[in-house]
Amino acid sequence: MSRTPVTVRAAEPTDVPSLRELWSDILRKGGLDEQLADVARVVATAREREDQCVAVAEVDGEVAGAVYLEATTFTPLNLEPAVLAVSPHVFPQFRRKGVGSALMEVACRFADQHGITHVQTAAAAEARDANRFMARLSFTPQAMLRAATTSAVRARLPKSRQVTAQAATSRQRIDRVLAARRVRRGERVPG
Picture 1 (cartoon, helix red, strand yellow):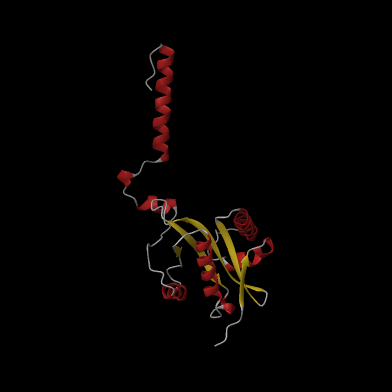
Picture 2: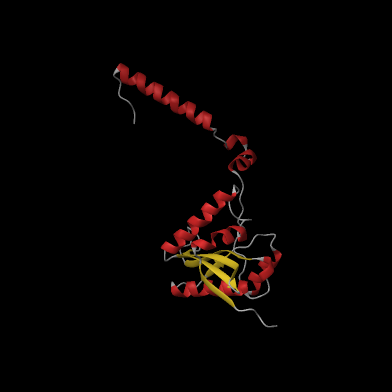
């Protein structure tokens, strides 16, 4: 099977609409203008910093896929250097043409340029094809990243553990009133 030549380059500001479309499922929810502004900021920041890159893959001059790369650490606690390859996405019409492999090759080159020996990435749990692709490239599961709204987490916590904002503010108000009374009476304010 012959593959169409894939070229990979750093993202330009003109790529922002294509990147917004490519990453629409992982961007914050909001209007089109907000998402375009977010992607534009990511591209601009990556162009200014040596430890970040947005790599765009093209097939016949058309954006086929992209990946965000950052030289960082495994985690905030495990300080071993690693390149984080975030959201290596390929447009459906360009899948199985070598675009994903080209993006991951760029991640490896980026790691080499920074003297880093590990690359990490993530794929949505329900993205079977993406997870299989990553497994074929020798990526092993390291963690399950989970997310929820603060209110949803708080609703599931035991009520005895919860400190409401209102209770905390009431205590702070009482402390301030008592301190003010002590000052008026000439007492020493603890603290």
